[in-house]
Length: 347
Figure 1 (tube, rainbow, N blue to C red):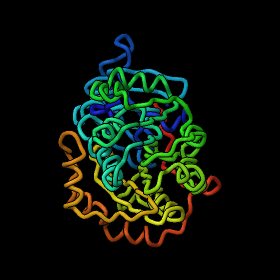
Figure 2 (spheres, one colour):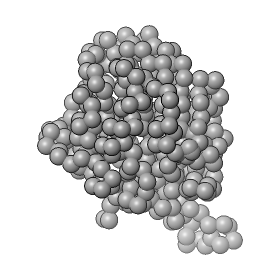
Figure 3 (cartoon, rainbow, N blue to C red):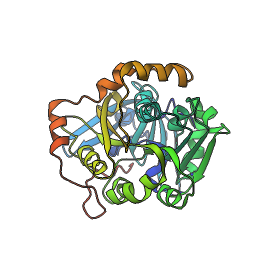
Figure 4 (cartoon, helix red, strand yellow):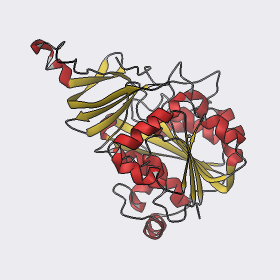
């Protein structure tokens, strides 16, 4: 995420390492002074995020800090009134300064805490650096491979997201610019934890291939060490949105791993509950006290969001979502994929 991001050839969808909004974003940027008219000034101080055909979110804007485009995507760094700096990739909100810690603590710390002794971690995507930042807080970790497709986005985040500079500069971090699927498949190395910090699956984009049963079964699982854990962001998980991809990703992983755990958290800048799914062939059997002890022993600094008690409680889903996960039959495949609304192209 943007404001708090620490510091790969992969798929275009891997960029920025968050999977925050596979939503269509209409970005209302100020025109150059000579083109701007007084009547347009109020309109230019907002950007709209299109959630569905008949639903938009509007965010008040202080300024546009930077705009650019790489070979793969458009990039913007905005200063919003409510959420601080916001990173926008291809018109999709990736993270914001005020609440990115919710997403990244939820993505990274549960699998590393449940693992008995995590030393090696592979991050698919994660170009903004925030996922790597949180991984590197674990004292046991010796090597982090972060694989993202877009060098320009990584350079952009390294330059503008100063909070992640220390992570980008860590000698434990191996940054690879490549297709995450290709890189993981050809790697001779196995990992204790593999992280899917990917964009949401959007129709017409290549990212959905990294949520499929074949990918999990034939590429991810063989690259995990004994007692290894896989975790992925799994899209919106609210009462009205969890059937888009969250329930399907959960069910798909259940067909590949013996133990699968879904959990959620509310992310204010997404205006929704978000979901993550952990998977392993070994049970997730720690209690809150044991998790708190591992947080104390293993993690440098204080966590802002997660505690043992909250992590356990986050796995208790509301009745509607819980029933959907129990009843879900869809398997995510290349030929039968589900998608998040919109392509998210910036105007």
